[in-house]
Amino acid sequence: MKTILVTVLFAAALSATQLVLAQDKAADVTDMQALRAAVRADKKAYVASVLKLTPAEAKRFWPIYDTYQRELEAANRRVTLAVEAVVLKEGSLTNLYARSLANELISADEAEVKARRKLYTSLTRRVPGRTMLPTVKVDRYLQLEAKIRAFQDYDIASTIPLVKEK
Image (cartoon, rainbow, N blue to C red; front, side, top):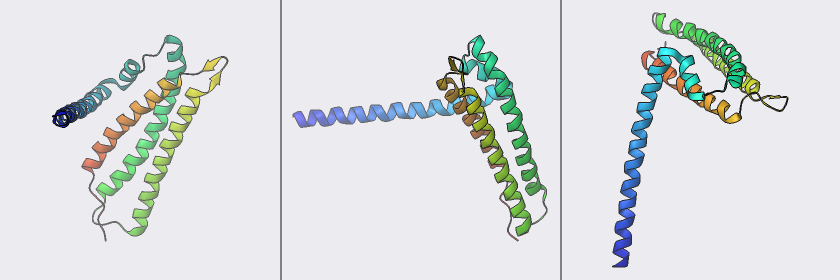
């Protein structure tokens, strides 16, 4: 009898856990959709609402954020030009042209990583008596930016055809 009771309780707990996990996944999807809408409306305002910076933190954060966004935009332009070259190219690509495009995409990715590293270093460097921002807030911002990049990358990937072989 005890074994049956334990088994029933275990099955109930397992079912409840699966239900909670399913709800969490649904919430994540909803959060990504809300994130996409909020970013399209006003990314800077959304970042501010998530980070909840103090006035002193905001004074240190926003100039570094603005620099990062400019560097990110430059990398995005490089990707856009490379992707447009693939999309607008009639027929298949030569190996040389494909290599050139691949190198440009990789260079743009490297520029983005370099900009992110610079942002992180700038935001976590020590100034007299403290860091520029608490590391938890820097990490939260990096997470938020990664989510934003994920849906932007998805939007690009879902609309761009694969290159054609010659």
